[in-house]
Amino acid sequence: MLNARRAVGAADILLITLDTLRWDVAQEGLRSRRTPAIADLLGEAGWERRHSPATFTLAAHQAFLAGFLPTPAAPGPHPRLFAARFAGSETTVDETWVFDAPDLPAGLAAAGYHTLCVGGVGFFNPASPLGTVISGRFAERHWAPEYSVTSPISTERQVARVLASAAALPPARRLFTLLNVSALHQPNCIFADAAEDSPATQLAALAYADAHLGRLVAGLRRRAPQLLILTSDHGTAYGEDGYRGHRLAHPVVWEVPFAARLLPKEEQAA
Image (cartoon, rainbow, N blue to C red):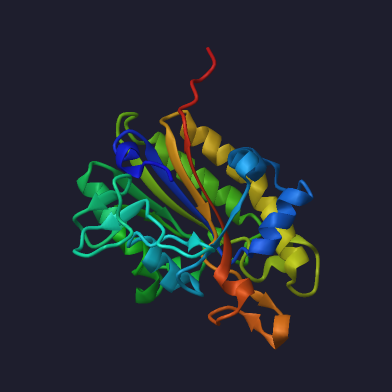
């Protein structure tokens, strides 16, 4: 387990949620070498199979921002990277960063972080009050139609937004970013010239996102070390046992890929 208690204050924190990405699709991306940037970030450890605390975006992100990231797919208890202070917690250990706030953005803001959210799926669309439940916790928040699930350029535009916001900050100011990558969510068939969504079209969407995520992490590493958390919030069903979609209890929905890495700052070449 990473020592989040030591990392907070010394590193930026980058939480990338690959919305709706299935465990098996993420694994196939590595096996088929269609996600080279992610493979480079993960290193030899690869993806870790975990269980999401929820089966759809809103509930999963609510849990994440309370410190309940996906848990290893094995009997626990499993220590947590971040935790709100409360009596009787069995998953708070010496390496856990404990915050006295109702959620992680508020806790990190109190620790001096600028908090940034770049949303993607509809739960980040501020056109409705529900769309501000997650993003409203951040000091800076962005959503645009070009970031959405129907945009074939969503990830590249989201990455550009994160890098622009980071560049506007003083170098010494620590940054917590939540980037919700929408490309994996239906309709991901737009990335494969297909008529309907499938694991194959989700893999095509993941390959598209991968082409831009490496640039994002590299850019942010030039300003500070990065505590990178790369995860899916939930999977989705494409007909398994008759199920389609998510917000349901099935292994293809609750099993998700996860990785956490502490990446050093990369000095710019002279």
